[in-house]
Length: 585
Image (cartoon, rainbow, N blue to C red):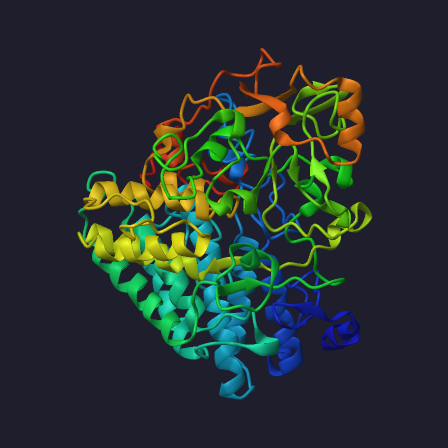
C-alpha cells in the first residue's frame, strides 16, 4: 500500500503553502505511512483541502470554493428563507455532518502516537490536525448544538451508535483541542508555509469559539451576564495581543485586503494558486452573466444592504447634515466601502479589462442576462439591480473567469479586533469599542469630523455599543460569511423574520431618448444620474413567493438530517424539531 502512495507523488500540487498529495480515499493506507514524512505531509494536506472548502449544500459535499455563499440567509443578498419548507427535518439545506473526515483526522492523530518520525516533525503535524478537528466540530456545533464527540478512530467492534454530547462538553472539547494544539506549533508560519496552522491562527480561532460559547444563542436565559463572557474576553484579548506582537494589523487599502496576498491583515489565509487550486471566490457565479460563464446569481446585494452603508462622514443615510441623502443619487458621498463592494446601474465595473465599462441593469438597455427582475426578455432569472465587486478580479476575461486565485481570508485581523471589542463591551468597557471602530472607519476612508468621532455617537452604553458593532460588521464584512451567524449568535434573527427583500429598479428618464440611450450604453457614456430609481420587492413578479422571510425561533438550532438519525438510533433530534435534545447550555 505504501507503494500506491509513492506512485502518485507526481500529483502533488500547491495548497496552503505546502506540498499536497491528492488522495481520494484516505482509508486505503497502511500504518507505515506515518513513518514517512512525505506521505504524512500529503495526508495532512489533503485534510486541509477538505476541511476548509464550503460544505453548506444540499449534497453535503465540498463545493470546490472557499469564499462563503451564505449572504442570502441574512439581509445581504437576494434569496434565503422564504417559506416554512426551506428547513425541514430532512434538512437538505443546512447539511454539515463530517464524521468521515473526523475519522481521517483521528487516524492521523493516532498514527503520530506510534510514528518513528522525529518529534520536530510529529508535533506540528499533530498540532495542525488538532486544529482541523476543532474546526470541523465547531462548524457542526454552531448548526445543531451538541454532537457526538469521537476522539479515536472507531473500529467495527466498537459501539458505532453513539449519543450526542452536551453543547458545553463540545465547547470544552474544542477549546481543549486548541489548547493542546498551540504549543506544538510555531508562533507564525511565513513564506512558503503561509497558510499552515500556527499559534496565531489557533489563538484567533479560540476567540471565535469562546464568543459562541458565551453567546445568547447558547445561553438564552442569561445572554450577556453568564460566566463564559470572562473566558471570551481572556481568549479574544490574548489573540489580539499575540497578533499585535507578531506584526498583524489593518491594511491601509480596503480593496487590497481581498485582492492581494500575504499581507499583514491575513491571519488565516486559504491559499489559491493558478492552475492547481483556483476560483475560491467562485467568481463565475458572482459576476453578471454577460461577463461570465456557466451560471451567476450569487452575492447580489439587496437594496437593504446598499442602504445600510454610511455616508462619508460616518452618519447613516438621512442623518448627515453635511451629506444629504437622496434615493435618486444613492451612490453619492457614501462610505468608500460602498464603491469597493457594490456595483449599481451605470456604475464603473471594468470587467474583462474593458476600460471605462459601466454596468447597466435597466431592462431594455442592459443585457437581458444582467437586467433587474425575475424574467426579462425571455431569460428566467432573478436580479436585484446590484452586483458585488468584492474579491472580483476585474482583469479576467469571461473565458478566464474561473481562474481567480485570490486567497480566501478565513480569519482576518479585523475580525480579531471586533471579537476582542465585543467581549470587552460585555465587561462594560466601551473604550475598546471606540478605539476599534475609529480605526476601522479611518481605514475605510470615513471623515473624522471636527470631533474626531468618525460619525460615532459619543457616550454609548453597552447595549448601544453592541448594536454599533453589529452594524459596523454588516458593512465591513459584507459577503464574508459573518452577518447571518452574528445575528443568530446574538439571537437577533427576529430582525429578519417577516421582512421582504428589495432590489432597485432603474428606469431611463423620459428626457433621454431610448435610441440615444442604447448607443451611449454601448460606449459607456450613459450615466447613473440619467435614470430614475425605485426599490421593489424582489418577489414582485412572482405571486407564489412568500411576502417575507420565514425565520422562526427553531432556526437557532437546525435539525440533524433525518438520514443521520435513521442510521444511528441513539441520536436524539433537537427539541424544536420533534426530539428531546436540549442544545442550549
